[in-house]
Image (cartoon, rainbow, N blue to C red; front, side):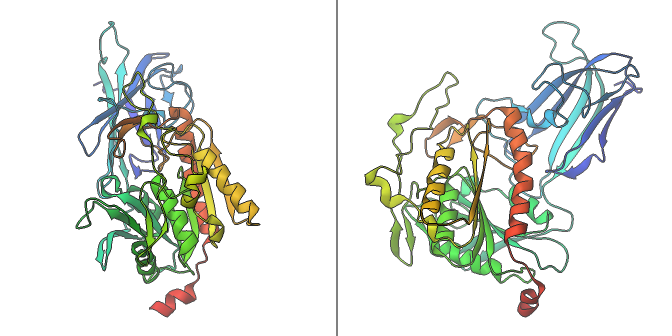
Length: 427
């Protein structure tokens, strides 16, 4: 490494996962061409990496907030491009960082431009480590095994009261503490729960029971620092229809964030108090579209919820009293999320309801998560039993995640009552 070249991460090298950092390089030659690289290894041992080529200014400096990448895994002025453009060293892998106590560690380095074709990396001139935390220093993490509930409770520091959010997961294999821990760091009490395949829960499920999630709502509302009349629910994909069913059939749901879900109850029949309330909208795997990448396009696989034979699967979302935020990625290839939003909006308007809002993101794919993680174009799908395309384009998807993360927090704060008198009553 060169002792003269300095790589800085500002305002500090240790930050929260959802916070941007400013990457700056100093001590280069005037107009010197260099390559910046980022590298990280996820919980499964998969290596993700990115690169971008820059030309220093006249004083030998580079600032990623000012200077464009001239080539690499992204181009143009993108301050966080090195992070969201990281790609796996193996095809069809999604970046896995699910345990809140494990930081996302990114090694960023500056290299001389490759002198010969075929050189993977030029000589390293400087490097720095960006440690991106999933959980704030004072947030309390508590494993929950109470009654039937299995999950993790995150409580922010301070006396409260805080709004409470239920973070929904269906499959234990897809269970992640990331979103819940980050929301708690931003001032929410969050219970991240999973329906099956986690801890001592059944490994497989033939049906879903709303009673389990009703118990989770009651547990969350009893927490000392929780204020308000009800809870918020955040969901994505299959858990989206479950969140809408909770809002439609259960008491105490004040606000729902539905991200790229469906307007009908999908895959598994839904029960409440031992009776089936919604049959399942099923899939037709013969409609899988193979692609050159060996990952399937699944957009047309789910049966049409508006077909006469499937109408009973539609969620009576007009019954929901809480506020609803529908989020759709227009390039979602998992299924047609935008069409499902349009169906629900039409249904709600037909019933004279106005307790909803929607936001659509052109160019974004299925998995909208907290921002600045590597964009995932394709990965394994448990239902399909193989790799699928999630859709989207990296730049548009990354921009959508930044916008949506702020929108989610504003939505919950705006539409969830939270007063100190209710908290004191529980103490």
